[in-house]
Image 1 (cartoon, rainbow over the protein chains, first blue to last red):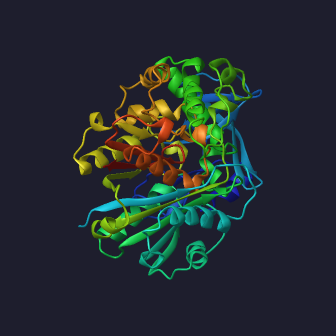
Image 2 (image 1 turned 120 degrees about the vertical axis):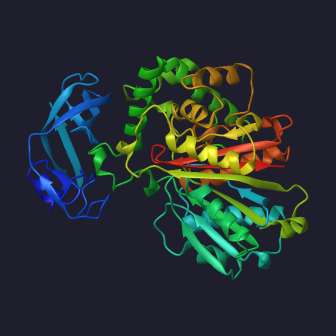
Image 3 (image 1 turned 60 degrees about the vertical axis):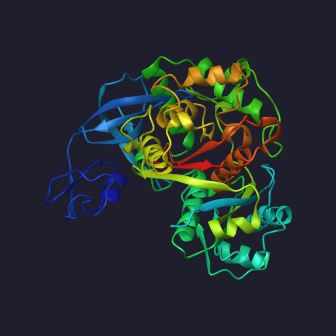
Length: 102
Length: 369
């Protein structure tokens, strides 16, 4: 499993335990529940906006991915609470992850 | 298990000065020893340093600077609640019999690396604390229909109260309009809603009951301790408008002290940002859910110093590793009736609330005369 390698290529994967099938977030090699090995699941994942604020012209949102874990992502248009979104862009910039949703 | 008390303290002014971390640690320790001549340096058998500074081996360095050779000496780091975590560790050393007298010294520089939790990649590019504070504020305002004006009372109150604290960073009072008109950090946060990272140091001596008798006539006892860590990552919080770790830690601390929240006469609250004060007051039970801002307005209008008498983090400044110790010193001074023009009358029981990283962990201390 190399979440960061995939993320740096702009691909957002979900880390899932190969044993108990739980989503393991933040990504680590072994499951924090059963210590099983974690693998990456590719897909077109959905997210839901939980909360947001705005800095300058940019909105930043807490987004719950696949009813499981939450990340903070950028969105260009004014968001709504409970709005369903998808990750449109992601990557690593100067060591920091970044996520954009639409 | 022996009782553990607070025997002495020393604190420096909180400033924006460029000073070495070692000098800061030494300065508050020197003030402590100078003001408490009954304390024999060689009776200090443990030295704990609380800081987020990256310098190494600071506790042995402080011990050498003070001229002692303790049995136990090490640093403790837990972001913003490093200070009370150090006090809890010192308590445990003494209560278990491993130590008799512990010097805890906390210090930080204005440019502390403890402001950013690099590990928390779930925050994406929004790792600075202003972003979690904005999310908390947005959520709290939405959930309880609270306005920016209502939240501004936290900053107005705490800057005002800080004017009676000679060590506070803030030297100025502000109006509600000043807070609203201050620099916009995000749509939900103004500059005056934020505590400021600064340079400062605070030291405290904890001792066993038998030792306390010899070194102080005004003992203050640690009767309750509660701690809870719910996660490290901000986005793991179940709610962004309440503080679960604070609520759980408070219940543990009050139970240990055999007290209820109604027994608390004075409290130090970790107001890293304006919204944190009402959220914490609700979590510890001094206010009903969603009504923290009403209590804060009432305290301000009646000049009641019960919450954050020294000006909180917003008024006093926030030198991370020193903050929890400075909060504990304030409650100690209040219970000793030594708080001068910020004294809460007849204070017998006090509570300290110190937290880290958007309340992912909290420490609560209950102190008594």
